[in-house]
Image (tube, rainbow, N blue to C red; front, top):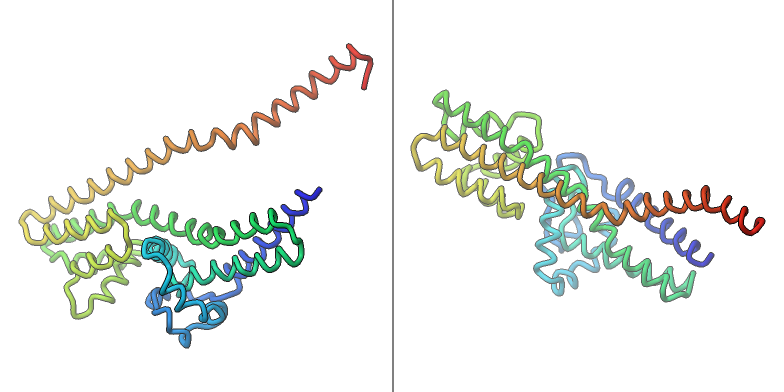
Length: 289
């Protein structure tokens, strides 16, 4: 019974936190990507939950590990491309995790006074924001990679009509897709700069190896000849890499599903069989229970 109470309490706390973060606080308009990485000390430019967390920004900025900040930066970058966590930066995100852990510790010890429950709830409170940002980030990355080969092929088709690479990219970026949205953002940021160099810089910001490689290859392609053929080869290589990653995920999925299948399918199935078949046998042998 105690374990059930713990489970219900944790589930309610996680549901409330998810609802507040996802639907109540800081719902910026879709597409507001320009302020995605505002400085952590710019507390006057934010409101709601992020303004409440502002006292934590400077300590987090000073003591947070750079590797953790880079990972969160990449996840937030792609989650924001998917329309989630708009306006958040890594420092604000870690401050949210610290605030969630602190609130869980206080509530857990005051209401329950149990160290085991509080430890489990604290661990979940730290990881829940990462789960909420990781899911949209993965979906945005996969959608981007699935659409990128077609985008490159369309650019190559435009270049076949004696259109420059920069102009072809600008034309194709008008398409309603996540790649088009990303490229429009890059074009807007490249005002007065070289477009390919801006693509390379934005690839570094995204921390996606495929995008970084594409930016480097575009730089080499623009300096060479037979541009259309080289662009076609680039699209083919990106598509092959995406297919290889998808096949790898499919192969790993089978082994990852073994434990859930055993716990949620095989064990209940075995118990059902034992009850249906075993109980009449026991009744016949021992005359009932």
